[in-house]
Image 1 (spheres, rainbow, N blue to C red):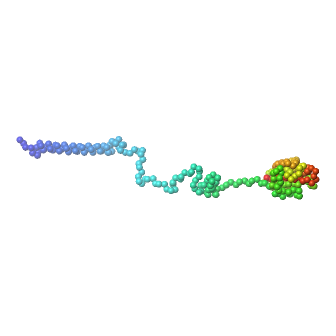
Image 2 (cartoon, rainbow, N blue to C red):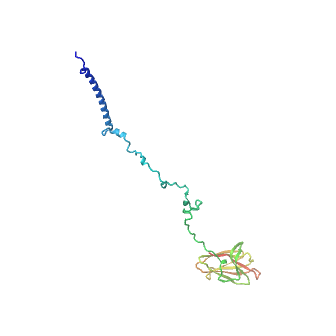
Image 3 (tube, rainbow, N blue to C red):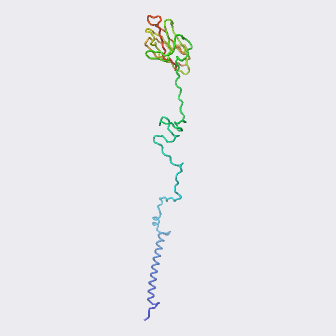
Length: 259
């Protein structure tokens, strides 16, 4: 019988077992390498790559160097104005009359511009004007009461039997006036029975036929001036108090004025 030595059949079986083990390990390593290559290599599975990569629509997070800087003080968003239209700044105050205050720099403040109101109508009372002709001794100016109403700027004529006939007084017409106004009648000191004729003339021409008033009656006179330069008022005692030769009739042009 031949002895089993190192080069016998028992040694061969040991070598075969060792070779099979090494081959299995090598195959496992190669398989793992192949799997890694197929997954992560340039020719690997495309679905795995797509699953691993982030979606293209998601923006990448900014890095520390790309953080948006905070706005500077000059770029801060202004606060909204209050709903009533007022603001807190001194130069933006509302105009006077809207919110009770006056601004220093706003549209209604001290620096704002305002419209100039046109001048009012000119009024000249005959009692304040100097007559240019006519009666002087038988007239006076001042308050007079007609039918319980006192007219503070009146022209009053005193008429009696000692100075019969028409009495006139003339005035220059101031520039800018358009009408003559007066309330005429006999004052409360006139005795019963008097009747007086009244008339207005412009530049020596009567504007109408005139009218006659007894005690207790008044009449409003309004005459257009036009381009006339002189105004004349006339009175004439038509009837004296009954049974008296020295009875006085006081004819009043109440608040006679040019305006």
